[in-house]
Length: 143
Image 1 (cartoon, rainbow, N blue to C red):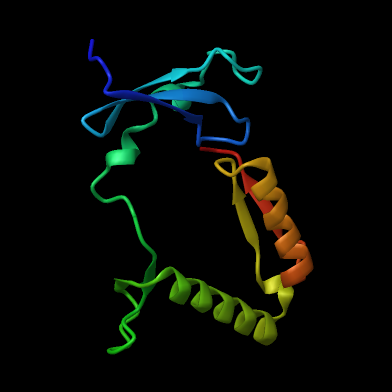
Image 2 (cartoon, rainbow, N blue to C red):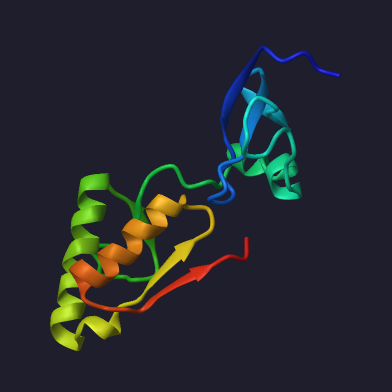
């Protein structure tokens, strides 16, 4: 068995339960995940995703920065190009506003995720209802 260079305590990213985990890291790569026993959330136990679902961390095709669909120069909509977070967020806000003005607030729906915390899911439904003006909110609990 490998001896880790370091063990990093953190929270499992797979759902909103908040299970506490230890990431075993060797050569800057996560190679093992263990449940932490020093808490009242999961008391060392993990679901199969929490225990074994960590290879995405080092996936070479993992997104690390925002992409916008379409080439602003040629107008081709099938390509994706990198952009800044500021530009990505401005683009999303502009397109949401345009869609709401043109088609009404119920033309927009918010789909939240079990990978978000309960607080993040609460904020997303609040955003949908108070800012967008729609009750079209759903949650996909299938990971």
